[in-house]
Length: 139
Image 1 (tube, rainbow, N blue to C red):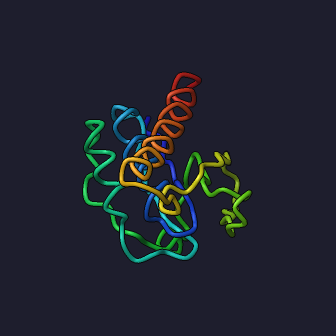
Image 2: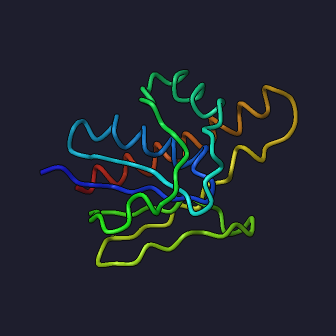
C-alpha cells in the first residue's frame, strides 16, 4: 500500500522540493510524496534542482505551489521542514495524520562564495536524506 506524504515549508522552493524528490526516489514506489508552501515563492530554486541532479535524484517537474491545492486530501504523513529558529512562519496541517517537524536550515538564505552556497544546499539535502532514510527504515 502506497503511503501519501505531504512536505510543507513556507516558500516551497528549496527544502520541501528536495524532500519530495527524495521521498519519491528512496520510497521505491511505497511513497507518493508532494510538496507545498504556506506562502509559495512562485518558483523552484535552480540550486535545489542542481543539487538533486548532482546526487542522482530525479526531481521530476516540481513547481512552487500553495498547500491550498491539497485541501481536503488525505495524507499518511505531513512533514514540515521550515526552520522555526530562523523565525519563519511554519505551516500547520490539521487533521488526523502523523505529523513530523524536521527543522532544516534554508539553503536559499546562504551567502558567500558559490562553493559555500553549494555546500549549504548539500547540507540541507543530506539532512533530509538521512531523516527520510531513518523514517523509511522504521516502516
